[in-house]
Image 1 (tube, rainbow, N blue to C red):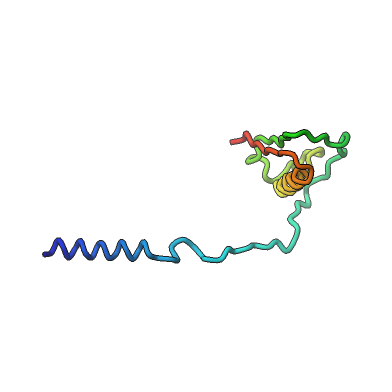
Image 2 (image 1 turned 60 degrees about the horizontal axis):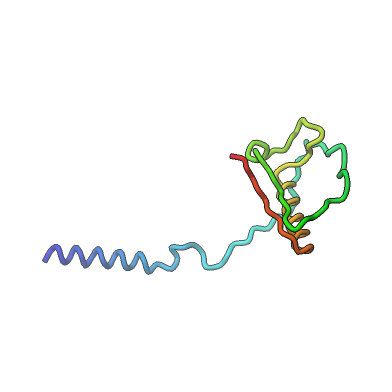
Length: 112
């Protein structure tokens, strides 16, 4: 009798836990808005611009490596004035351009 009561109680607890609707987070997605532009005042601007127009192929790559070590940007290097936010903006812009051109863009990060 005691074993069946314990089993019934355990089954009731498990079934009520599995039936919990709020266990999987909120039902509506939370949207975080950025009200100000992130910037890094200490970063210097790059000293030169693009060498020429970018040539697009059917398959294009953005390759990065060691991004985890450079999240602050290259503060003391004159030719590298970008930080992580600049890279994210750049990759989104490139993805948008690739979509407009109807070509593929693959972002490959080989860093650890």
